[in-house]
Length: 187
Image 1: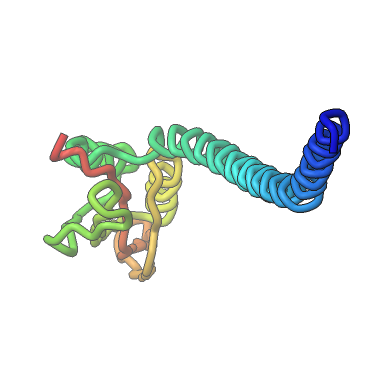
Image 2: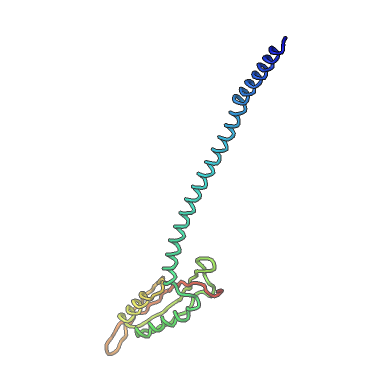
């Protein structure tokens, strides 16, 4: 074999090796690499979708929190602070004087009853009021229009006739007044 033929054979062999390498790279290596990259892209897209869902949930939670915060601000105006309970009790006594009724009250429970742990509680007052019918109704009307939220529960109405010059009927009310309060003692 002469030199030219040897060179040609070497070139052909190198060319065949290059073609086989290209076929191997194109046929086996590149598809596997493309498949691996495609799977990685799919995983990243799924992570992005999951993050979008979580962001949506966070936005919903933020909106709900804002609504609760707004409602809480509105509620706070109508619930008495625990430190102001004495003033609240005095205001009820003043309503009784203003209505010209006999008034007596006591707290039913010495223990605080929490509705929301460490923040909102209620106190039950046992209240007795007596006077003529119009005055007791006036007392209840004033009690209803207090700026602070309260519930009148377990109301009992009794009537007894007074004998005398004008023979007016006297009404006696006994009820439980539930007063809600923010516990501000620890602040």
